[in-house]
Length: 343
Image (tube, rainbow, N blue to C red; front, side, top):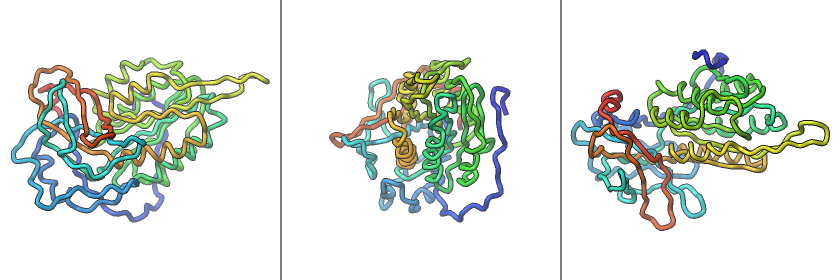
């Protein structure tokens, strides 16, 4: 484990509930080979466990194979919502348009089935959260109990120290139990915690997600928003951020109010994750539930880069049905070096 982290070994040994098998078809990293994915067509056609919003499996009958030869693609995880903010399932490939530096590109990858993800759930356990820690733990449980059989996670906390449960696991009982081992402290190393989370996920294949919660500004990190955002881009990690406006007593009769760090929204927007800002503690549970629902309702679309110029390209995803909004990461680097590093 890295020297910058204080880790606790995860506890194993609780009997896991028998679970249904889910298909593993996600492309790994920024660029993947078509041959890596083409051979998984049979698995992709299986019926999956229904997502919380009820998305149906993508239509397979008569569908032509997506890949015909080895090629390289940029996968883009995309969330689609309607005007009321509800998740939109069962869209087709033709409903999406990808823009690379403002120009439409041909889509060579489209997956509309629930895919497994690996997540670090990193929680603010600084002094300002003391009165709300029990509610925060209960809310986090709502996320953890919604993990599907092939999802994996660690739980962690940050204050003056950064803690992790130790191992990625799909044992929900173990993860919930590990929440009780996390310790609170002061001050708040928000961006250090995000960078540690990304580093933990670096060697994990597939979808890499950081879910971070805080009620205040970063007060003690060695890293900052810029470095955390750059690391998230480089390591193809999606960041979901939950901010909370809290208040706590600093002296008899004196109440301190907090607001979440303003950089969290930018971090989530740039990486394609969601950002939620809450004012009531009873909103915590539904919000953690919503994050789990979104992660099981992602579309994976992708394209072959038109040029390899080693430059950062702007990405935009548009969806045709009126009133719907597509949310996805906003850039990628067209790099041969990165291409070869993620075959």
